[in-house]
Image (cartoon, rainbow, N blue to C red):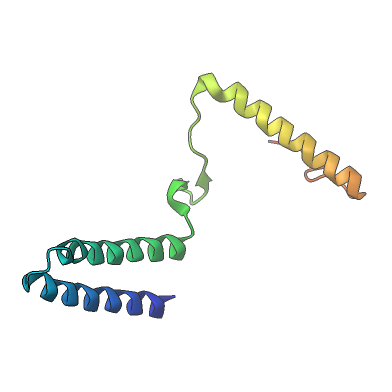
Length: 110
């Protein structure tokens, strides 16, 4: 993945230099490409960073190192609980249909 990023950045740099030469030579359309290739390079770095870190943007860690769930507005807490309950029912029904024990069966929530 790193090699691909380096190759893409080199390609963007070469294309930028090529289009800059054409734009300075009088080709008006090349000015658009002069600004486009650096944007492609920035986007490539952004995508590389996103893939490398697995989209962990929304997760936070507490001081003890545990992942902390994002806070939910109290007016939507009932909706969240209903959704979680519905998900548990679906998982239990699927487990029953497949003939296995539902997830979390035999455990108590603290």
